[in-house]
Amino acid sequence: MTRHLLTSAATALALLANGAWAESHGISMYGEPALPADFDHLPYANPDAPTGGQIVTAEVGTFDSLNPYIQKGSVPWQLRYLIGESLMARSLDEPFTLYGLLAESVETAEDRSWVEFTLHPQAEFSDGSPVTAEDVIWSFETLGTEGHGRYRGFWEKVESIEETSPGTVRLTFNVDDRELALLAGMRPILKKAQWDGVDFADSSADVAPITSGPYVIEDVDLGRSITLTRNPDYWGRGVVPFETGLHNLDEIRLEFFGDETAAFEAFKTGSVNSNREFNVARWESQYDFPAVQNGDVVKSVLPHARPSGMTGFVMNTRRPQFDDWQVREAMLQAFNFEFINEAMTGSEQPRITSYWSNSPLGMDEGPATGRVAEMLEPFADDLPPGAIDGYALPVSDGTERNRAGTARALELMREAGYTVENGVMTGPDGAPFTFDILLEQGGSENQAIIDMYTQSLSRLGITPTVSVVDDAAYKERTDALDFDMTYYRVGLSLSPGNEQYFYFGEETADAPGSRNLMGVKSPAVDAMIDTMLTSESQENFAASVKALDRILTAGRYVIPIYQWNISRLAHAKELTYPEVLPVMGDWPGWQPDLWWWEEE
Image (tube, rainbow, N blue to C red):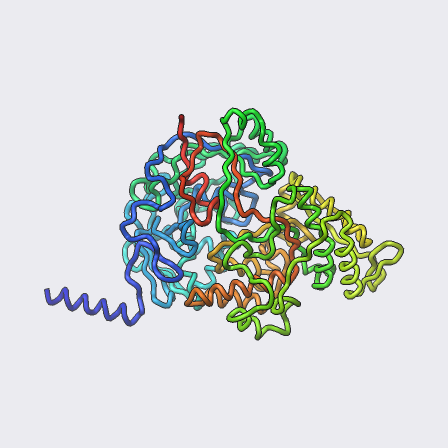
């Protein structure tokens, strides 16, 4: 008895000295997880959902790799969500909270300088072998050194990784960054033994990673389709509370098509049974085919509270054409959004107004105030015009000629040193101002938008070229940052963190495969991301994101198009989803994860 008390006292003193938190079923960026340790299912999951059925989706493009964890090759974006598992899983209701998955519990220092995961004793890979601490350590090290660029920034912040006791792995960090403990929980765990004698970084279509997830790759027609089946022996079902009511469909098939038209026709004929529609005009006018009329296909409109993210056409500031903010503002003035929106959507889609618009993290209108102003002030001399005083996108009168926008664009180009000579926009060196717009084959909507945009640019004496290339060439060129202007999409969440360095940080701006396509290199941007990651209060965190939003929006790097504040999904009537929608709505982790097949 005495020895037991002494040991307990010693342990308590050690925990106090290290500022450790007690072992827990989950972890949050701020405060405690909303769900208690004894929760039995997610509040938006149906614990009684039956198993069976299939979902088939249409994807535009192709693929040449089955390894979503490396830089090489083109891989379906869904694959890493469908086959992979991490130590912890993200709740779609709590943007900054994780719950145990492969890890039965998590423990961390109060200052988040280290985090420790204890593996679930029943965790196993799809081949039946156990998930071990050795697999965890190997996965962190390999992904951090040979894996996709999205994993490498995290690994540079790891001081050490070790097995502290059987089945328990501790990571110690070398920087002050409160999000790292959560990011560690989200890293995929792979089977070490599979890669003995295999070049991990060079594997692609010839090797499908062995993972512990609920689905396994059953059949592949390279470039054309992937079929995944539910693993009947999946270890987590009935074991992990987070998994209750999830992964109910027996089969998931991804079918690939050359363009949007072919993909939509496949849905109309029944070859595909679920389709996510981004074009509201098509949703209103073309979803009247027989399967919709007779009720075999259901149209679902789903709200969400996610940020808009940024979708549009990005200008590469590494190129001399776009290294001047006045030129970029001129390109924005020339882009007649109101006319384009009427032509494409019947003016039904609101415009993206900033990177975090449609959310409480979006920048406020007008001048910066309060903590946001305080954070921006030290960088005032280097910030783009409008970052502190306030910036809003230009608004046209909706007519095709857009006279005011064209006039303002001409004025800005003159201020930047350009003149129109014999109907051609000309630089100080006498060379015509022009640029190339890179588009991916099959994107008919983007091509239609760019056709209207080039007509507007012609009124400025600017004649850009438009290069439409196949998927492989597009990926190769964007990975190499070899473009002047191209389509751009970055999805942003209510829990932004370290990934912001990859999207907007100076260190990754010129790295192959960088998502910082605009090439922004700003000490102010990096400082706001730093503050975001080290904030110990929700107030400071929100202010830093709002400040970052201001800098990026006022930087005029992207010509935004419309946002989707709702999701539009048409699907077979048998495909069913829970009545309760999570805050994140239609997001990775929702379809197909929470859906099930229900016969009448």
